[in-house]
Image 1 (cartoon, rainbow over the protein chains, first blue to last red):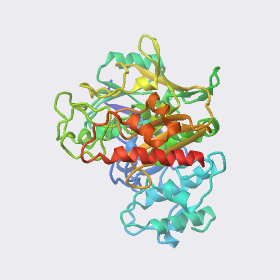
Image 2: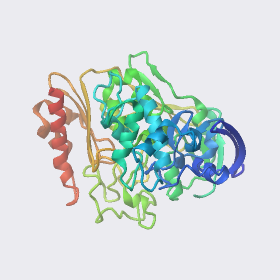
Image 3: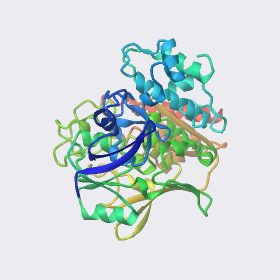
Length: 172
Length: 316
């Protein structure tokens, strides 16, 4: 057996087939092989959330998964959400509410926030959900709890919550 | 990270045979713990067996009236399952108290049970650790021990098991199903699944080499109020200093398991029997053999106070 493996995956709607060292994380595949450098490497240990992307619609830490484990998966990165002139509503809300300072954690924050609103719609509970049998709601407390896997060293948290709340249709 | 070969297992049999054939092989499912450890070269498998393609991702009713949770059910899906929320609320609560949304989307039921300790000395490869390198010594003993175990410790190891989910499963008397390369199946009560460190802290569980977890079974629902209360250094995304998982019935009887204080989920049926008398009576049984350090003695009081809050919440 070899130390490289072929993997085919779809990134932002485009198919890619490549052979990579088995050690390549999904994050490194995105950045080093596909040159999609919007996804950031922060801690590289799943503690900061800067590398958050969506795989088949669910947010994950791309640093804690091997590229070769994503055969035929659909990956969405920040580049796939929107682009200058055609921003995703979450990107526009982060700009409007000044939801960042240095910007390094922002792609991860935005990918996470988009997925958080989907998780609430899908009625996935969180640590602060009061009634486990009721529909989850996008309250500020819920948004804060659900975004806790994304660290911002500049401390833009309150503006981030304002941005996410606006996209959810509620005021923070 | 050390180089390794990789295969996508086509069947449980193929996975267990591959594990048996190479003593340095490891299974990988969610990968959120093992890849972290491989980057630090705490785990150095020469071969990874990817078991994600094996199905095992169903939550099904059992003929006895309980549920069978496939080993590969993701933590998010288990927490969100309608039956789990309704009948085993404690398990949902414990799951969402752990990790982050991103990690719960990847982490699996079996992987959660099998995650390694977060003892900082286990993580620091420059320091001796009997769990990481058997016989090298324990750096935690005499070191910084605020997070460490207060009961069931040994001269070799004072690490804790970090899982929230396992505390709920211990309270609910889950049974772990396994199979080995010869096709021999075992049903292991969760009370016996995780080990105390003794003089072999490198073994977290009773699993044998190549033995593969296929499911966790929950017995029929027992009713009662399901409460998971976790005390930690920040409000979210942190491991427990102390956590209490409890099912309390309207007459005050119930069950309780405690996390953050031992090498395994800590429950004593003799302590359950004291629950109607209150938190002090039950926690004094749970911690009767406690051997805290000066730095983690606070956990002894914290268990009683957390349990007291749980009992008060149950009375509503």
